[in-house]
Length: 426
Image 1 (cartoon, rainbow, N blue to C red):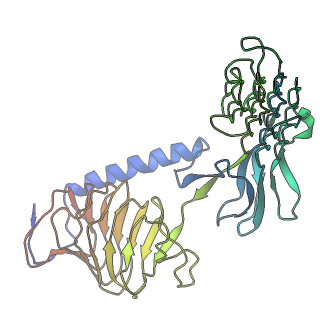
Image 2: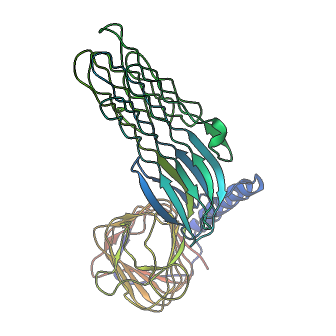
Image 3: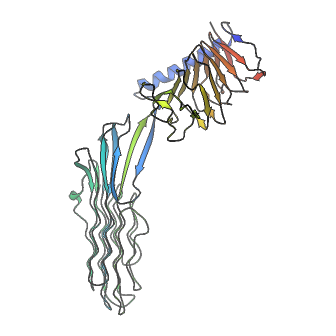
């Protein structure tokens, strides 16, 4: 239909009102069924933070609304040993352990501590063992370690170096799963085709222990873990694992007059997985660009009702435009809120290259004039109960039912096309 510049007002009784009642009733019954079954509407997003096998000390501040976190730790792999000349064949380092707690209670705003174990150092050329891999852990605010994955030990150096050993499974701890890394393989001296520098053990994974180092090739990674360093079979320095986390380096192998260094292990890793609940936000703006977007760091929303911008928008948030500050809103990207409520006495304008999308529902319940200029495709419907909503573009009210129940709907100076089903009710 065409909406001309004059106002379209309620109340009127139309057949569309019957369609509205049917749709609301069906949705309500579906929600009741979901709640009775013990479920709830989707209102959260899963966030994953990974250290990506970068050794070091970190802190994590628990976000607002987060009360539990899954913690996974991988210890670092041990380094392969270095070898002496002529008959040198050093051992490979062991892979790091894995430990997990599925649900650890946390408090929003508190700081927690993370340690990612450093890779075991390579054994220097000569009769030198590889270094042990560092431990990885997560601690509470005390700080006291609550999840720990031990690093693998280094391989022995010399002419027939022993393989790096794993720490006892009990040395690592987590509330729900602990697996130890694969041991490194001992070196075997001899001519090419007989001797080798022992391969590094692979790290433990999220459901099984790691694999023992090999005499040829690399110990394969288990699910969620990293491979070991490949055995040294043609004479040369030991090998670093191809990827992480937590594999052991292989031992060096010499068939001539050169001493060789072993291969370093791979650093550990820590991953935190938690659910961030969607916020209920009020528009504040920044007084400059006033952009509504999904860009992280666009701090234009109030999340705690103190009229101060303190957070950015995440798709799924519930948003309200109730204040009178910065009413000219520029949509910069596609946004998909759960719902949009326009309840201000101020006159708001929505423009820009972005649009309102997803299953959002929009309600105009303020006394101000809202001018909507973005072409939107949200599907949750539009309700105008008070105030005025002006169309400054075609098809700005998404794809759902438009209900006019006391407010006014108009176009700007140009006739606008509205393809939605329309309900005009008392």
